[in-house]
Length: 203
Image (tube, rainbow, N blue to C red; front, side, top):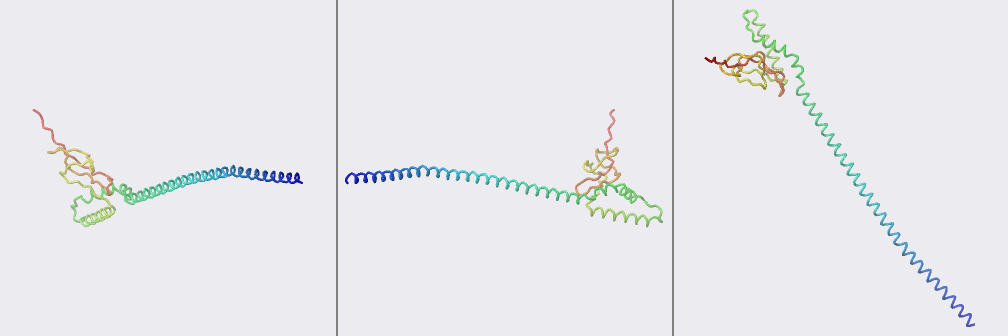
């Protein structure tokens, strides 16, 4: 009887020991799995941080491209507006250049002396038309360049077509045709005769 009891106690102890060993193995496995899960979590966090950095860089890149495109568009618009303003400002230039011979003819005819009284009224009407034409050109921004006799020669808006002896050098002696300027752009310089001081003969 005692032997059977001892055997049963021994079996019980063995089972308890096995259970304890299994529990210890589970704890060991849990401890081994825990660092593995932490490692996976750290990897995921690291990946998400890298993705976040990448997305921020892409967002900044697209933002810079947007600002660059916006600036290019603004510059293009300003350039087109400037070109349009320039076109409007100087739109009459080609027309003025074409009618320069006609303007010169008007100028010469208006300065001609009329000796026959019968043509006096015609001459007055002609001068009136010339005045109206000049007024219309002035309203379009045309400035007439007609230097005064005796003034200094200015190469910025005059062109010397001939020289004549005078008491001083570079003085306007006569005007062939007056010049024309559209706003700040020279269309044609005034054609003038410029004085040249006579050289004294040496004995």
